[in-house]
Length: 217
Image (cartoon, rainbow, N blue to C red; front, side, top):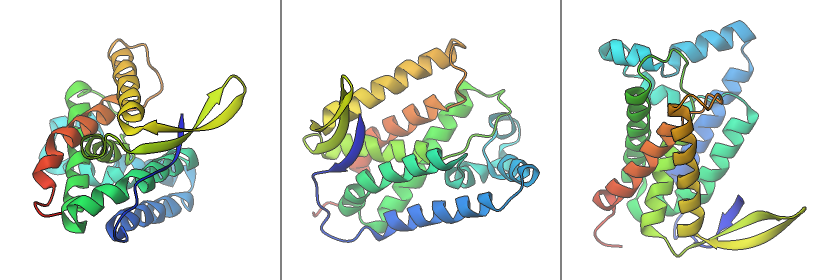
């Protein structure tokens, strides 16, 4: 299933959501200008390395936030920003720009900390906005479970447009992350994807969103 758009319309322009998308794009543009050695140094300096954070948190805590704006390639950033554009505007609409930004960053923090807790010896830099975006998805599931996600769904060899309830679309996504995370814990997943960051962000979003929703809407 590939989501194209949702059926909910925002009441106001999602300025913070678009600022996040633009900032991610600007950082990625900077990455593209680096040579291979420079890019490796950049990602190791500003990406979150679980072993370093677990052993020296006072020195490396800032990478919890900087890592959210780094990406490893075109597919990585385009897929993340596409999902953020679809789901983030509605969450910002409910929270307001300031609360949405705090919620987004805390979701990314929860995602990072769970990944570090489960992989404290990893020396691979963890990068990407997907943990924070997973928090947005968890919030969406709680606030808009009956919303429809218009998606491309393969039926045999043909892609068909289907409106899928958010509770089914996001529920299926979360179960797939749990399955992949379980494989990673068993050592059977070699993709390098931080599945437990996705899970941590999503669970945070589900549990915390009610604390951020404005009382009058």
